[in-house]
Picture 1 (cartoon, one colour):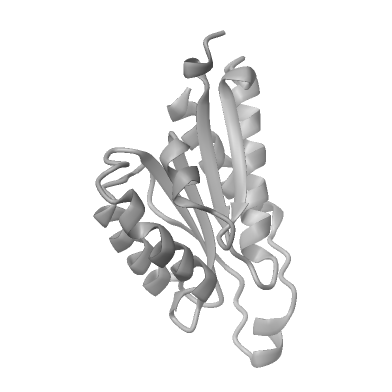
Picture 2 (picture 1 turned 135 degrees about the vertical axis):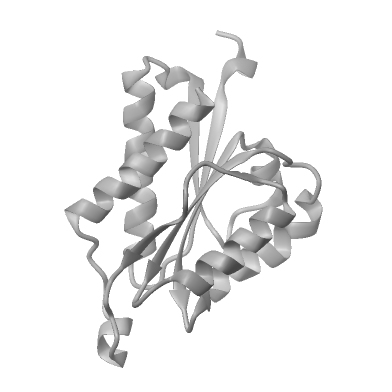
Length: 171
């Protein structure tokens, strides 16, 4: 197998209470399952990076990007926004057309975080493969907002499907 045949899926996540990390892990499982089903396992490299450690070099090496973050106070989480701030200009005009998917963990609706992330991804000229996936945790009190989250099996399955779809498009 020629190393240039290998595709890289980069999953970048930030999670304070566990929801977005569970979503990222489910998407990874879906990507691995798709690669197995397509008998393309060796041709798919999956990198999973916390937003704080993801670099422009990671982005430039990626053939597909999956982002998983919480919505905090009607915006992207600070750590995910900091990732975009740090990486935006070094990557600008260098990832045009790269497929991406977005997953947001939200207490209520997630729409503001989706708009913010999509605007940044549009600036990078990434190509969305599906509408943003929003998992609503219904956390509305300070105690429930700060508490560890547990994503339902149905929501994990949705994340697996999105990860699998992105992987299949790369292969």
